[in-house]
Image 1: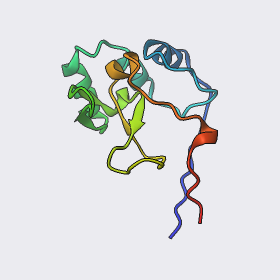
Image 2: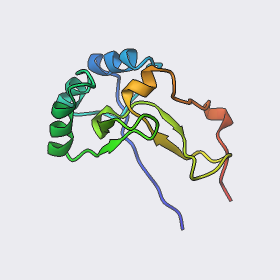
Image 3: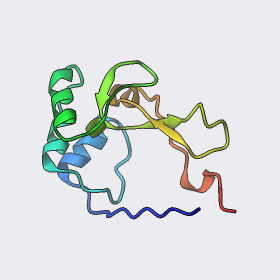
Image 4: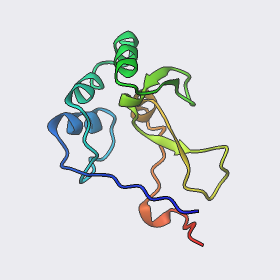
Length: 120
């Protein structure tokens, strides 16, 4: 069974650049476009969880606890990631973490060339 995913990439907007700067992540060359409202709301402080929860609910993003710290965050705030502990070592599966944990340097970025190859 094979699956295919197509992502439309575009230039990084000024609001998206601010997001990457704020979460202390390198700015990518291209990104999937977000609605402008989501770009702006995700720049609000994490402690304003009520606004983030309303935005996530209204725009059908997930609202879930961070697997590292337990603080809730919305899908529009997805920042860094860590390897998925349930998939085991050597897989390219990861779990998204909250912006606060990403800023704290808890995110793990695996260089593209070091990702495992799962082709048959």
